[in-house]
Image 1 (cartoon, rainbow, N blue to C red):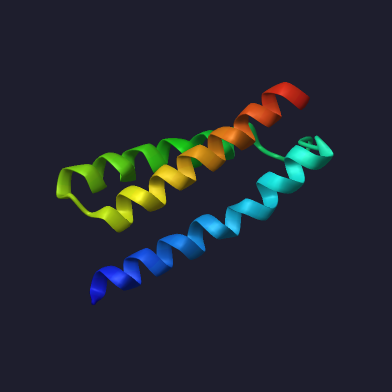
Image 2: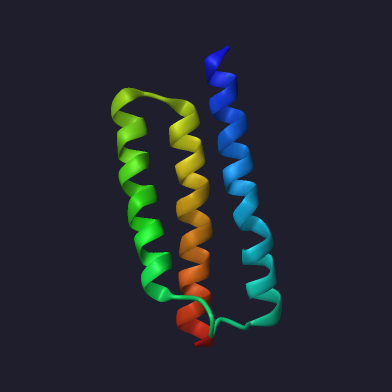
Amino acid sequence: MQKYFGFIGGFITVSAFVPQVIRTLRTRHTRDLSLAMVGLLTLSGVVWLVYGVVINDWPVILTNIGMVVLNCTLAGAKLRYG
C-alpha cells in the first residue's frame, strides 16, 4: 500500500514540471530560468535516482528519471535559446 503513495507522489511531482517545460519549448523564453538552479535540480535527481536503484525503490527511481529528463530538457532549452 505504501508504494502506491510513492507512485502517486512521484507522478504529481513530475507532472508539476511538465507545464513549465511545455511553455519553455513553445515560447523559447528562458531568460528567467536559472541554469544553476536547473543544474542543481538535475544533480539532485541523479543522486536520488542512484539512491533509488541502490535500495530498489521503483517510485524513487521512476520519479527521478522523470525529473532528470525534464530538467535536462529545461537546461538544453536554456543553453539553446539563451
